Image (cartoon, rainbow, N blue to C red; front, side):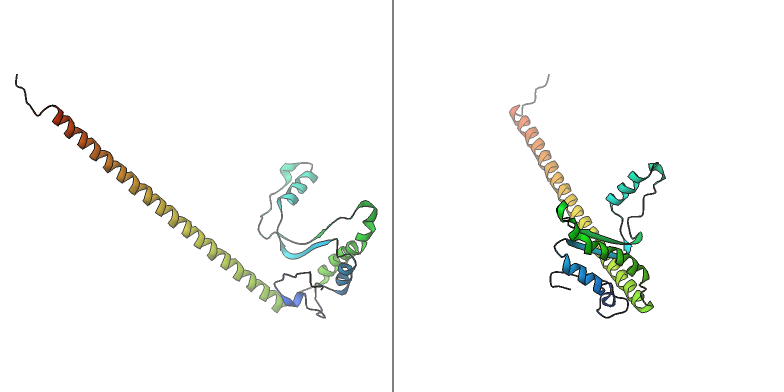
Amino acid sequence: LAGNYVVLTDSTECVTKGSSNTMLPEFVRSALTKSKQFFRSMHISDQLMTTELELAYSVAQTRNPTDIKTPDLQFCRRGIQFRFKLPPMEDMDQLEPLMQMALKMIDHVAATKLNTTTRQKNIAKRLQVQEAEFVKQQQQSHEEQMRKKKKDKKLAEEREREAKAQKREEERRKRQEGRKGGGKVVFG
């Protein structure tokens, strides 16, 4: 691919040129070369996340919205997403190579099977990433708890200082009131 494209993948076998199961066959390279100014992204995944927009579209397409089951917004389905920049109406024919590529990719991806070793490597890498994210989340949670605990401790110390200061002030006032009376005791 040209230098201005980036490929993010779990497996280099999926994008290696000449590989039997490559996700970047020649027709993709050709379409990207012809219409690169309109291409934004292509996302192929066996764990495609459903977005709120897709969910809203599903609801809009259903006659009875109560029939829609909210998908688990974690890894819920396989799919391909293409994003293109649309040209002016009079130049729509310039999108033809990208549209043909999209249709061919559907068949190509459906026909492509990862071998067992590649699939296992991908699963292991995904588990590593999930574990790292979990550990990071745990650390953030722990740090947040520590910050909260520290803040609560400071608030408690401040309240205690204020209470002591108020108590000292009350004692001082009582002493002064006792002095104002002259200290004389009148019997009656």
